[in-house]
Image (cartoon, rainbow, N blue to C red; front, side, top):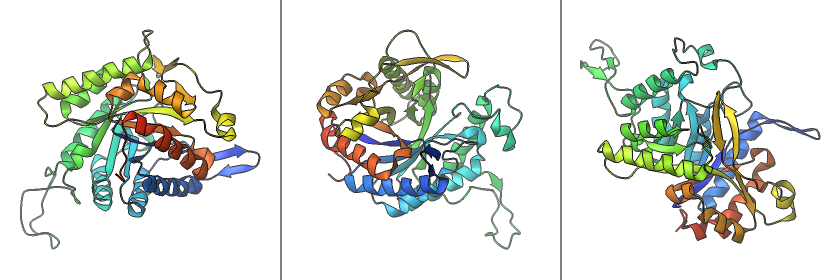
Length: 343
């Protein structure tokens, strides 16, 4: 494990006991937490994106705000639902955030997670999908997005425009951020999707679940997916080594409060049905740090990936989450090979 960061689902709403977490609270707390993690040397702050739900839905303003207030930490998404995106507008936004951050954007995208509404992307104007889950729209949008961030000319220049240079030919979208393509990730929940990402030459965010349930442990299924991705990358002839991330719920039990919230959460893999497919969900790790170290060393997918994302309970606030992250950074991560951005 070379890097670790946090993956926030960004939930907000009623918390019980008369407490309320608003959308503004969620975003401002995310900025505060990222600043604290940057000071600790944590590598990344990543955010889930969900539409028609009380979660983060428009991440670019948040990522830009974090980038402007931090120095080293990577800012990113895990993942943006490409069914909902205008590819060229997303290319402009992503380049802007990448430039503001000095090349610290890790843009995770995919077909997206199951929704709280029926075909919500159609309400955004993206219709005509032949796939009941809109995967064809997501792939088409992603392919155009990649062309845009690669700097391909996509619209004919108007030689008579008073705002142009008098030139003809095709114009790329602006701004353009060199190297952004190397910081794009595809979120994959199965082997086929991971192999496709390897063939087209983008990084891999392995999902919090896999649409496979053959009795083998989640970490072994995920490690097999990662191997298939890297093999597809090599066979396609891409240069360099792609990055790979996995996410886990991991809680070092340091205080009575930790035990109260998570002491009973040590469980095994879960099998469920999502989008009509039997799927395997990874287990939660919650134990004293020395026990966690030994458990995580046995997780085949963590060993295979270079980046580990800790899913955090955003409803518990900045102070609690920062303490969880600091405990992991101090007592667990160094034993797994992590050195941090401050080294």
